[in-house]
Length: 223
Image 1 (cartoon, rainbow, N blue to C red):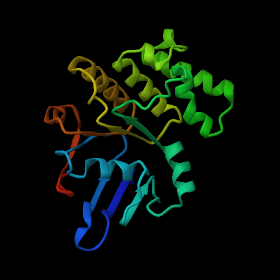
Image 2 (image 1 turned 90 degrees about the vertical axis):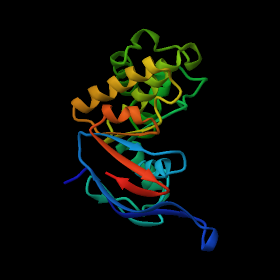
Image 3 (image 1 turned 180 degrees about the vertical axis):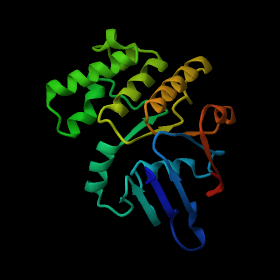
C-alpha cells in the first residue's frame, strides 16, 4: 500500500468564469521512504498541492488517502489532529517563535499531541543534538544563523515522528552551501526510511531526489 494516494484531487478557488483552477484533477502515488520534489514555476500549483498534502487546505474534489485512510473531507478538528501526528511541515521562512528557545520551539508539536513535559524536552533535546544544535538548546532563533534555524524547523517537523515530511521551498532563504547541507539531512532521513516531499522551483535539485512531480498551470505534466 502506498503511503500517499491522490485520486482525481483538485482545487478550485471561486466559481463561474472567474474561477481559478489552482490544481486540476490529479492522480498519483507516493511510496514510503522516497525523496520527491514537486517542481514548477511560480503559479504552477506547487504550493496548492503541498498544502493539500499537509492537510492545510481541503480539496475541491477527489480523494486523498494517507496510510490508507481517506483524509480528503475531514472536519477541521480531525484534520488538525492527523496533521499534528502524521505530517511534519518545514517552511521556507522557518516560522519559529522568536520569544521561545529553540528547545521550546521543537516541543510545540509534542505539546499539542499531549506528550508529558519531561518526554517532550528529552525528545526535543535529542533531535536538536542530532542536528548539531545540542549546545544551543536555550538560544532563541534570533541568536542562530539561517541554516541553524532551518535545522530547528526540521527538528520540530520530526518531533511527533510523522509519516511524511513536507518542505515548502526549505532551502529558498539559504545560501547554496547551507542549502546543500539541508539536502544532506533530507537524504539521511530518507535513508532511514522517511518520506520527504519538497517543493522547489530550482531545476538543479532534480538530481538530488528520487522522483519529480512537475506542474504547469495547475496540471501535473510529469510524475
